[in-house]
Image 1 (spheres, chains in turn green, yellow):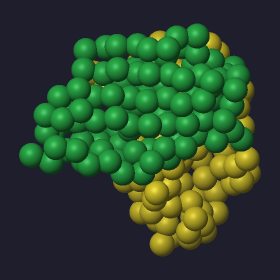
Image 2 (cartoon, each protein chain N blue to C red):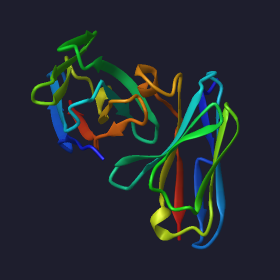
Image 3 (cartoon, helix red, strand yellow):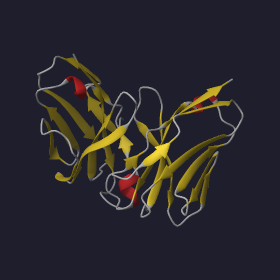
Length: 110
Length: 116
C-alpha cells in the first residue's frame, strides 16, 4: 500500500512549540488526519485537513499541508506535559480505510 | 457512557487456542473496524464492516474471522493462535464508510492479546 512516514521521536520543553512532520506518497490523498494516542488508550482524532487546503488552525494546533511535496505537519503551540503521547498521521483517498504512519512519540519535559 | 467498548481488555492464552474479542459501539455509526497494533505501535487495518456487510478484508490469515451480528457490534474470533498474533487489537467506528466521515474514527481502548 501507500506509505506514510513520520519521524519516531520528538522531545521538547514545556512551553515550546512542537512540530511533528509527516510525508506520504499517495498523490490522490483526499483527506489527511492527525490522531493522538495516550498510553494505554485508543487513538483520538485531533484534527483533519482536506487536500485542497494549505492550513488549518484549531486552538493550539496548526496543520500545514504542502500538497506538492506531499508533506503534512502538526504544530502544537505552548506544548504541555499532557501533550506527551504518540501522534499518528493518516491519509485516505477513497475514504475507505485510513493508512496510518508509524507514529511520532512526543515527550514534553518540564 | 463508553462510546466504543471492547472486551476483554487483556487476554493471555496459549498457542493453538481459540479466542474472541467483542466490540460494541453506541454512537449509531454505520461502519466498524478492527485494527492491529504491533509492539512498535504500527497500526494496520484488518477488517471493516458497513451496516453488517464486510467492505474491507486486508491480507489477514483466515484464522481471523470477524462477525457483525448488527451494526453496533463487531466481534473478532481468532483460531489456532500463534505467537505472532500477540498485539493490541483496536476496534473503531466511524459515521460513514466513505468520504471524510470515514476517517473520523472513534477507537476503543484496545484489547492486549498475549500468546505464550
